[in-house]
Length: 389
Image (cartoon, rainbow, N blue to C red; front, side, top):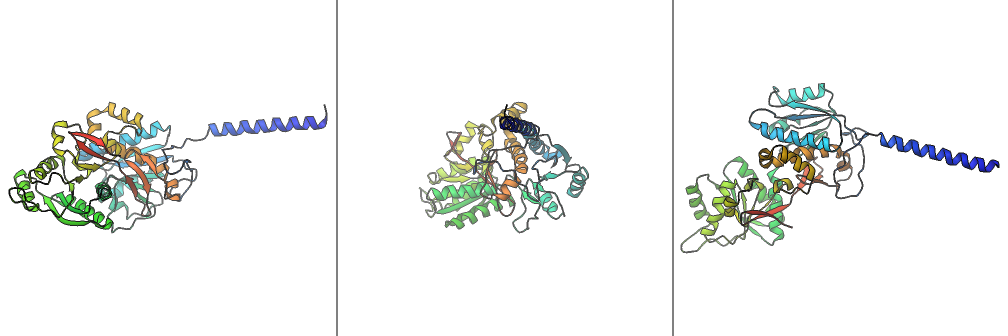
């Protein structure tokens, strides 16, 4: 056998051995979760100052209220987070810290650091997020609520939550695209209602629309009737104000079920009504929801019983606790998406146009480190929820 032939055989055998070695190394590498990335077909494993250089997180502190009045919500977020970790084959050490029993959010944060957490998810409450924003930290924190707009975001703090302001903004965009231009705004009385009303107004005016009136609704049915009669300038037999072509509503289902029939009674039933997701109870209430017919609202996919996103987790979590799931599906979804976000912070930071298909919406990260949700919209028809294209 010639020397050249022996040399070629040697090269071939060497290349085969190297290839086998590479395959073995790849099969033993840690698995990194890969949620659906919508803007690009590739899943980048990029490092940022906030994420371990190998994009593998080994220890996560989850700061949630697990006892007391918010236990149901906290437990739902926890179950969603843990289910997502399990389904993705990920095995980070998850450190559960109950903020309802810690003396302060500072104590909860200190406990997470003492247990060597690489990243913190939580806290859930707005005032706790305001507090944690003042801490000096070298590890990333994905807060499950948002800072006030006038508070600057520290470099290691990321914000993700179920803000009704997202719902209000997208409802106004939907109305604008439908050709509406002049709005009345009706909200529940109190701080929550006034904040959503302001969000409606700011977004509508930014688009170029006009707000011709705002009303804070009473909780008394008799008072609501009197309020709306005056607000709509109603005079018998069927005269009312005509300076508006759309209504924005932020209220509970109970108040909404009074408002919509009254609009018809005062000859404004043909005016489209756009609402926040608070208008929907989250459970099938066909007989009651007929009073909300034609109302349009935008909400998290799982809140609309859209189980085409993470269908296995949807069925698993719903089967485990049907009643709680129906009531708290959006909080289970919050936990699931929080798990995926922390593993994709490098992608979202490096590529601002990148989006993730989440159970709470289509997610992206803006320059203020806020996760922005793009939501699907739906409409009440004959007491049922019908998705809109």
